Length: 314
Picture: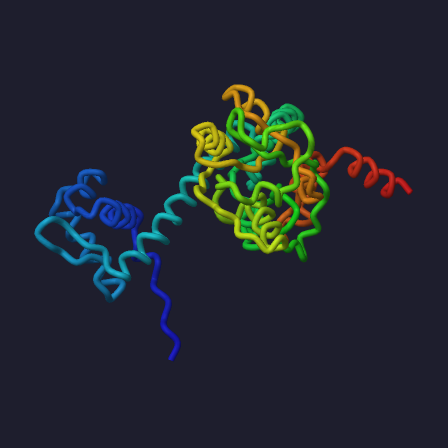
């Protein structure tokens, strides 16, 4: 027999917020204070939730509470629900101020660091009734988010499977090797990646297009990639390189200002994969949406946008 769905109407928002806070703090007392409830009232609300669900959400002990498996599921989805309601409230408030549409854009670090800020500023002036909510992710996650419909459009480095997404060229960038000042590999001529595989490497986190390209290149050379540290930002990568902990590969456009500020060395990469194509695509469920398509067309590589206009005119 299929499990019967819960009657969500029995879960009032105050109780959901209380349970989420209780899971976060591991303390009903702290959660009650945060929700501005008396401890007895908070305890009663948790018991009512557990009765409605049919399972305990928390195990009580002398120092507070411990979240059960059911409690972790409830807290995860409860938090998502509360965040969605906050977002809905924000968008409704924006409607009263003339913002007709919110678009969710997920973008890779490379696209944000090199290209997107001036483009989004120009679009905001051109279309003040559209508000763009930007989230930074590694390219692999951008594509996954597009597939799951959790954003309207995405900008990412070519590489992940884009079947069904109809991506368009966005911009191109170039990868360079970032080196500590005076490093033995410093020079002006392009360097083959294989020549640097004896070094320790600093990289972005798993899922970043640059790391995947490095791993594939090392595999093709039948050599290990000595990955020493992984961080979230280009700045952090450069700080670690400056400290002599390793070398790195970064997009030239984003890295050069940091390299100059920190007094680092850099060298072009000779490998073909160092010349990269960035793409822009609408989520599957957003294709055909005029507002999304308008932003995709605005962000697409200018030459591609011009070609698309000519095809329509023909």
